[in-house]
Length: 624
Image 1 (cartoon, rainbow, N blue to C red):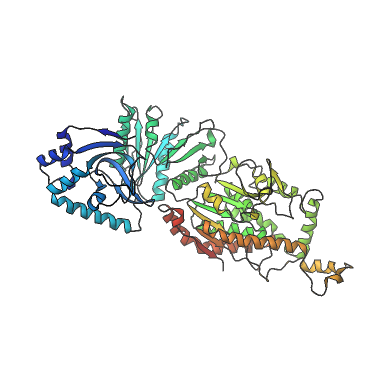
Image 2 (image 1 turned 90 degrees about the horizontal axis):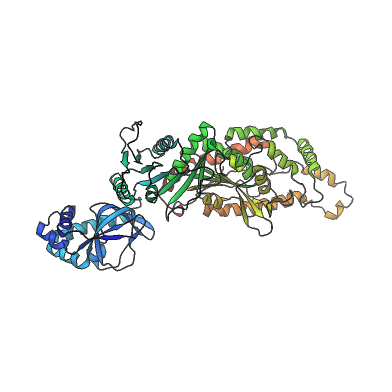
């Protein structure tokens, strides 16, 4: 709730003379005007004016910062000495914007009668306010967004002794991301010991003396206002500052340094929130979205995670949705390789079917080159004879009891042993990841985000008719491609600012031929009833089922363009859907399609830091 402060008339008059637009008023005029002015205080998040309301007063900012929104878009910001709310008094129209507090503020309220008196006694004020109004209208019509400091509050709730090192590493990561200096404001009970200075920065230390928490909050808010031109301000609160809770909601973003037993905390309205864990300190939760980050054991990935947090703070994260598609999914490795080479980090991964398998390996820390090495072991299957031998080997996994040609036990065993997936769980990930499957009972999308990765991948890749469904908990699951072949909504829900979708399933293409067709045709001549088929030979039932599923997934995947910012479609029409032996060719096609998208990804990633997702627009990159 805001508060009203009544000041002595001479005090209010002195404040009026400090306002740039009123410097022409005499002391007597200021004292007359001060009789009609009151001072009010508001906390961060409070709304002072609402769009469409009648105008009853104008306001002058004494301290803090506010912003005006029109139809949800920020169009103006106000700091000390600036006016707002005067437009409706000048024009007689309703309030044209909603004004909310972004840093605790004090404002001087000039009611309508006092405002009319002020304009009458000081005609030049009308000219100044009209010029201010014109400037605001020009800014409102301009597409470039207004910027203010993003305030990041660090809460050391688990008493990390490495807090200071974390804060400085985060500041360095933010500066690399923004290519601008950021500031650190430390709130401490006593002067800190000698620390490494950061030359040229607007860093500050505020001592929490024996005062009321409200007084400390006002001092911190004033400090933040003074350096509000800095893109990011990190507020570091010492663990022995009792007023820490009173400062937390000053932040736009709160980072909680946590342990496994740290109780959860609900963020304030409009506030973003992330809990950070350290595997060197003990067990950590599954890594599946932007609500938490985990510092891994390996030093390289610890640095990556801090940079990942910096991208979350600055709204520059990239998420990728890896679609279903049997062997076509090997092209995902090429897409990841091209993005790696371009220096575009992947912050969130979701996959369906083969996309869940490739995505899990990448989320565990394997590079695209390492994934390529793993799949190239399949390159020995270069002939119909080799393929037939593989089919006979798979026949040992044939299923006579459960639905599906194959039980999938051999696939599960393979997933549990192949590097880097060996016995891995969601708690072992270094990049947030989810696998998507389909609930056979309801047909709904199921996002798998805990437990073993092998279970999640086996469920996500349970192609109907080919593999038996897989039970996870009380759900019976089948291939994620049946309901969401390119899980862009999952990636967006994980917290990605820019979503890249990869649909690897091509439209039907006569160039793609089944290498077993000749063998199956020869066997068909031995069938004494084959003459009943007539003169035209039809495709075998396996091809009919699989191609039908792929047509469905291709069309449904393309419809996801409205949910993604970038849609990459490698040109794979010439290949058969089970050509796993052609891994190098699939990967090359993925590289080509993703490389064409890199400039647009870079441009849209920069825009994602300032615009809502729906304002970014979708772009399609088909392969050549």
